[in-house]
Length: 246
Image (cartoon, rainbow, N blue to C red):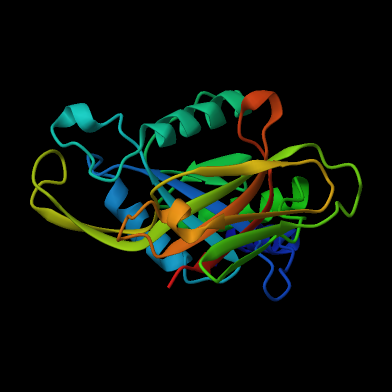
């Protein structure tokens, strides 16, 4: 290892704040597309990162590459809008695939594991994300989310979202840049359900599982995200959790 590389490793290590048991240290959202030849490496990496229990890893397929000859079978236009709004909130206009947004405040190339880990460490040190210990339970045919009182008493209003997702979906791509390949997508968000707004006071939300899945057979997990939305744009992640629906 060169002196420069060693120094960089020490700098990153100094930024890392360990997560306590059961406490997430990062929410990473991968904006990807079946029509993007650069994306399969990032999709595969997400499958590895999701194995880390301190990371909430979500795949958000977008639709703006559909014109290249293959309509993404998992894309939601809302994911495209969300990615654009992230760029507007940051002020950098950086919208591309594969792109990972870390903790709602920073972006990085989705296939660069070292850069992802570095960005996770930097956001934890600078922005203090995931400070709210939200809980998520599935029992009795209901999904229940509990958000406690703000420890600081200064948290701004945040939106509370449920994201039903499918843990693994193989797709045979027949046209476009990835034609002839069977690609596997992990933790694919299939819907967004807004539960309400958290204003720093303890709140509990409960919805039937059937209303969360809407009968989609591939949905087997759900995530909850508590996220600031300054000026109507997605921002810092304040809390997150995941649970199995089966």
